[in-house]
Image (cartoon, rainbow, N blue to C red; front, side, top):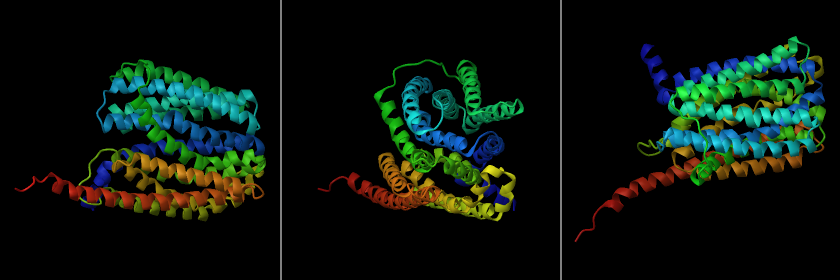
Length: 432
């Protein structure tokens, strides 16, 4: 038993230790999300909750461009190529702030047209997420690059606590509205990011400064940001589309059901986040290395996703404790979304395996094609069908991504293996 536990602990290059840290973060995030979910249901109408959820559906893809992509790109620059940490900070922090201004303006312009919220509410939410929180996320990745994965998790744990404090505090004061919540997020995030830049990053050896991002920085960031934005559009675009096609009340019910399933996907996100940087180094040993690594981890994650989906289905009666009377119908939507969990388990790891094979551009192309498929399905299925069309479009696009990702990694792994075999022959001197 001791040997088995030791083997499990060391599996996937010490994934277990980082997973525990990630799990700690997501347990706190789960508590915060459930608390926010319950309290917001009491404070908002279906249409109000649907509009807020739709706005975050718009912010998701833009957030990938603003902070998620640059955060992963700086990690690759440090861990794969060994670039100087302060050079990374200056370029990526400046780029995050610049992109944040551009995406914030875009989000506000689009949301004013399609989301039924006031300009002030939209502006506060967008500024909190695409500017203040964006900077926090990049700071957390800077900590990851130099101090380690647990340091990043500690930075993000504070954000979870701040969100929980804002929701619970406003509820206790009887002032839980979208405007007040967004304003609280913006104030708390801004104070925290100031502390990170002035105290925490310098303590880790960074010299905080800004400079014009280099072209190579922008390219590296785009390699990660574009596919992440496409993936986010695929997963979150349905909430925005429901609002855009005037299904505001249904968007509230769909958002509540999606939130429950999303919470059930916590173990998958923890494992996936902890495993990501293990695919970045060029550590291929033997044939089919990245394919085998992806297959092992995918098998485990698919099992976790399937068990979680079954557990949520069995626990459906318990959901009545989480849903207010106004949102009780969301329970009927949850079973239709459960196939989403094992499907996302199938596609995530092989897409990361493509990074190990040096196929970042091909990976981006697959995400973009999947996003195009999802948008096409949203336009074709949501009008006239409402949330049923959103469910069908979401699951259909995830199925496409799973098939495309595995076809790609099998193909490019075979190509890499053939190139590895041919290299020694090409290096042999000519005879005679």
